[in-house]
Length: 130
Image 1 (tube, rainbow, N blue to C red):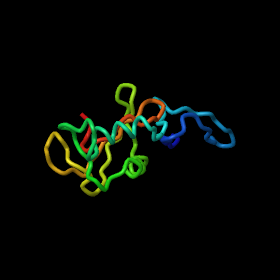
Image 2 (image 1 turned 60 degrees about the vertical axis):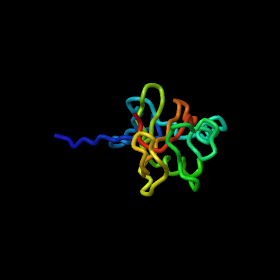
Image 3 (image 1 turned 60 degrees about the horizontal axis):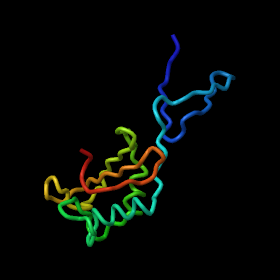
């Protein structure tokens, strides 16, 4: 009986492993996380819909003034996403209040970052997905 290992590589879809002296090409199941690419369109959407002074803020979750898109995305890069439809969703525990969640009306340490299948930033908002 041989010992087996289940190996998951978060950002590489196809890679080599060595089995004895033989290189073996292996493939992750499911789609690979493309990372997060900050885009002007995604940044504008977050600023308009979820930051103070936004033109489309009405009734939506709002980040506190000290939060920045770059800072939020940087912390989200370390979170394993899950595939929801064609998009990647990262739910981040910032470890500090980052904004007010519209579903509770209370400050929250959690925020969600959504990217498309190419990793382009779609939106981010205080609170969890769903």
